[in-house]
Image (cartoon, rainbow, N blue to C red; front, side, top):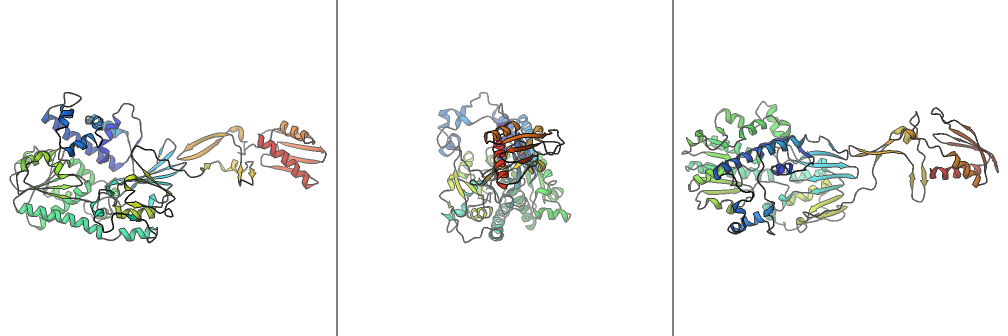
Length: 578
């Protein structure tokens, strides 16, 4: 659902950002965007095109008439967001947006500008939904969005790939709106303590039980029982589509419940993209859960809707104006259709027609405010059932997850400060971030530099014992490739054998010897590329010695050890000055 706003950005003049998405997210997002454009087109056809850039309803005197809850959504809490509203995008905008997206598989590497290596890993929430790893020269950053350990449709949550990063940005805001956490007996403050070992085994123990699975299945079973009861009473059931995974589960469970009741009730899926959507879901087994994949290995279709369509138990319609639908509208039926907001799509027409039918049932899924959503349809006597399904990690599950991931720096929303406290011994650093503000995260000390092995073995190192570091001077070009620094040495710095030329400046060396009172002369100097010993220096007074200065080292031959040390210090001072 988060991809819906993307065309509003890509159509802006000068927009040039790189866009990454998983293959499934990009395709499903495209379908949902096209469906939104189609529903909006129908809205314009009904109400007429907007003749002015600033609609009449957006004028101050008109906005004041809107109910306070809706007015706050439009204007924002500070009353300044009205100017941010803009016309919806067109189908051409959607086409341009889709072309800009670079599509990735899970764990596939994409290199941005040579600096960042970007990878997506399954979040377990929906097909194609993911968390991100950004690997750069200064460290590895993980972006953790809404994720789920319970998934009957999508690939399992791959939390292992997020372990041990330099920084982790936690961005699952569903935690704050989770009602199950508010009902937990010790829910007001979750303290990260030492009772749970920071290991994957501990995480599996907490999440591997079937309690949460059973809670989700109980919700589905309750909806099915209410649906059957409504149908038996002569009413129809309307289910606006929100989460794709929940829609697919409800479709299958409701169909099973109808079969078990021995009733014949038509099920309609009304959407301009429903046919393409259902067809696409059958060709992406690698993005589905293990349970779904096992069905394929057993020779069964990935989803039940394939057989339901063949048996004509469900009917897919592009719009609500189909004669096929209205011919049977006097009989009980079940409809899945957009839009969950109850402001667009077939659901608007359906509610206008059936809102005064006390036998019928509307099932709302998600965190939509029913009082606000149903305002345009009042007075309304049809029954309404609202059910919340898991859309993220949940507050009481944050603790073991973060203890397992163990990032060096954790960035947490400011809104969570009163809900969770973090002991310093568990995390190196915890920062609370706020929307619109910049958070500075410390990087790891130093960066790795890749240098060809042969030249690196012949560097001239200057060692500083007090600081416990060694330095070498190099000439070349520093580049960043695939998120790592590389040094491309100058050709002048290498001979044909690939050795780094660390020969001192002879004029400076002789001048240094003279300043130290040492009489020296160059006996042999052969600077061609084949020479292993570019020069040989003889010293006569005050002591005799021979210095063979090569590309891979220096050999000093003398009768006294202290003389060799004295000459080496003089050579070292010249090399440091080069």
